[in-house]
Length: 108
Image 1: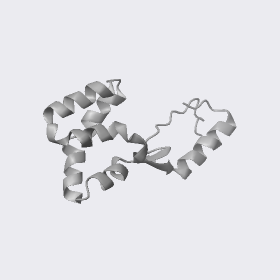
Image 2: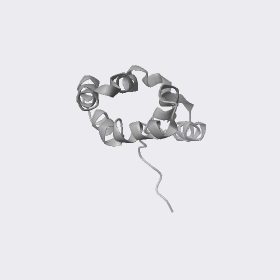
Image 3: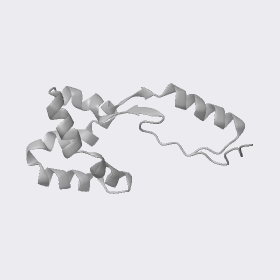
């Protein structure tokens, strides 16, 4: 027998919301190889995790612009056009969220 959850924590990007930087950068960097290189080497996950941990966007942008001044506009687009990285809800996960909420499980 499985014990029901007492609390459930949902992430947003990639869990409840279809969030992907490629949604934005496909328009800004048409060449796929160049785009993937930029997403990996410039605005990759190690950099993004620091903002998730609380670093300010201004500090994050300043760090990358100092290292990659030729990509200033693309770096600033990451948070300046953040809404373009979201393409709607991930319906299956949202359905689970509603099911759990209907049972009274605290959701975060």
